[in-house]
Length: 370
Image (tube, rainbow, N blue to C red; front, side, top):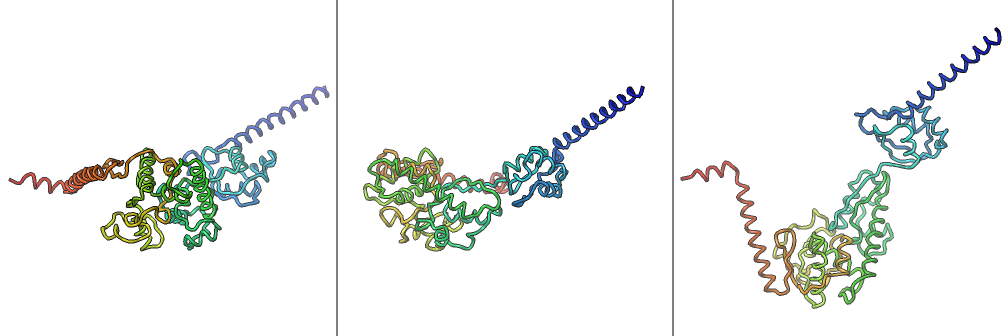
C-alpha cells in the first residue's frame, strides 16, 4: 500500500513537471515567435552602439516600443552563442520580425542602408552638393572647394570634373562623404582604363583623359543610348579633319565657369545668347579647335565606350529632330535643311503652347465674336 502510494506520488510529480515543461516551452515558443510589432505599427529604427551586449540591445529595442522581453532575449542570445556577436549600427524593427529572426539580423549586420543616386551628365559640383545634403553621411568635406578636396583625398588628378562616376551609391549611416568620393573616383578610373585598353585604333585621342573629356561632351549631347556611338563618330570625324566641335554644352559650361568658378545645375545657363556663343572662354568650341581643357560633366560607362569605339560614319553634323533624337548629316547643305525642319517643328510647338496657355473663358469669348 505504501509502495503504491509512493508510486502515485512520483507519477503525479513527474506529470506535473512534464505539464509545466510543456507549458513553459509553449510559452517560450510563443514569445520567441511573436511579432515584435503589432501588424499596423510603424517601423522602428534604433541605433546599436559598438560593444553593446544582448541585454543592452534588448533594452534599447524595448524602450523604443518593441514587444521584447530583455531578459528572455539576453538568455536566448547566450544560449545560441550570439550574445557578443551583435554588430553595431542602425537597425529597423518591422512587424515581420520576431525575436529569433531579429537576433539573426543583428548578428549578420543587416543594418539600414541608404541610397544616393547621381545622374549621368551631372557635374562634379552636383555630386558634391548631393553629398552635402545627405543627412545620413558623416560630413568631412563640407566647406572645402574642389581643389581642397583633391588635396585632402590625395587624388592624382588636376581637377574633379569628370572623375566621379555617376551611379547609385549604397551606404550605412555614418559613412563618410570622403569614402563615397573615393569610391566614385575609383569607379570612373576603372571604367576609363578598361575602355581605353580596348579602344579602336587610330582615334584622334592621345590619352585616356582626352577620352574622358569627349565622353562628357557625348553624355551632354544625347540621352539616347542608341545615338551615343554615332554622336561620338561625328566628333571623331571633326577632330580628324581639324574642324571645330561646335557643341553648345561646352559653351554653357564655360559661361558658368567664367561667372561662378564651379558649375552645377543651378549656375549653368539653360540657353545661350549670341554674345555667349562668341565668348572667348577655353570651353567655347565654336571659337577654339580641339577638345576643351577639362570634361564638362560626369559621363556614363556607355559614353566612355562610345568615344573609344565610335560608330563608323561619314556624318559631320547633327541637330535635334524634335522627337528626342538627332538628324545626322554628311554635308553642310543637308545639315542646314535639317536645322530648318527642326525650327519649323519648334515654331509649331511654340504656337501650340501659346494657344493652350489661353484660358477657356478667353477662348469662349473669341469663338462667340460675330
